[in-house]
Length: 494
Image (spheres, rainbow, N blue to C red):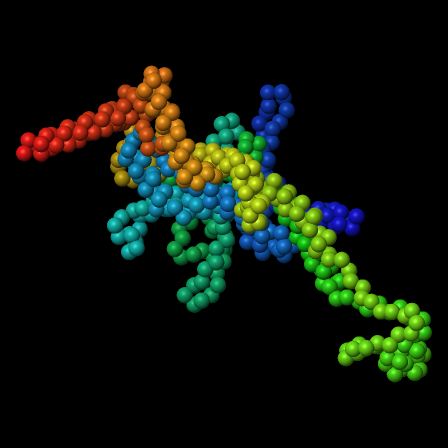
């Protein structure tokens, strides 16, 4: 019962990652005559970072799981590759992502950890000695989410009309005097308005500036967002209560272990004065008790008892052992709530084997869901990159549309994958030889397993279809065979 009271107290004192926000975005009248209000509450970003870094004092013994939950998901998600019908556009977008690979990885990390990540694309025209090869370059900037104070949207279409940013800035003048200010920005499709409250930095030019792009170059990566919420959700929100319970139970067990780790001496005596006199030379028992005397057993290798008198040690049960079952239960609650296989947390081998077979499919579904939720944001980023490149470098692309290709998440090793592909190819070859399947059907089915294969046939002259590639390969092999045959005949003639 004591353990459950501890859990109730821990749950009752739990703080929430999500903090209330007073501002609500747009009110839209529904078809049934009611009103719809978008939930604009946001994650407590500072606390989410503290849980991830395990610097929150009230979670120290439980928040160590938080980093593994986030890092494992980010690691399996990886980064996408852009595909476009325009090969030049595809090369430019992929090259930009490759140059900013670390920032792109951090975008996924911040979005999953904090719920939101804002990427601001800017084009720097200043010539830098670090980048002498380019007069201007496209820069990938990550905005701390707490700087985005408000996102104004069209009440009918939901399109972003304006971003409102606020940031505290500290700088020092030539004399070393500390200066502080608050920089406010409002970004719209037409302009960018900068205001400064406090000491103005010498390099900053407040006022109204034109937006040359015709769109707001900010992309919102929202984790697990939907139409009812303006901001995303942190993956740590679902496990935060269990991290708190794990910390409190573990802390209580450790404290109990410290209290009861030292055994206590138990004496069973019938004649206390005789025991004190025989073993410690104390003759006046009343005076000894009145003065608060203490018995020191140090150096006493032998104690003298009379009759049925006896001595023993009182040892408490292990407090940590009593809490093991509850800690294990809370651990599996963390595994279930985070949809993370238990072997990622570093448990022993037998559990790891069962974890891979039973829990890995659930984790793969989670990774696939995350990838799909970020797809629109990555495609919007690609469109902005191509549009800004087209306007700045006076070039054109046939389309800004792109699709994403992700690396396949597979819990099998390379040997298992190769064996499965071999079986599939042999089955298709046998079906094709027996006239049970067409070449086009076989190629289209195999293309699901081999990423480098192209569509079988089509009308686009810019694409080399798989049918043409197969014909070229057959002609090349035929020429090689003819050449080898000719060489063999020449040798026989000699």
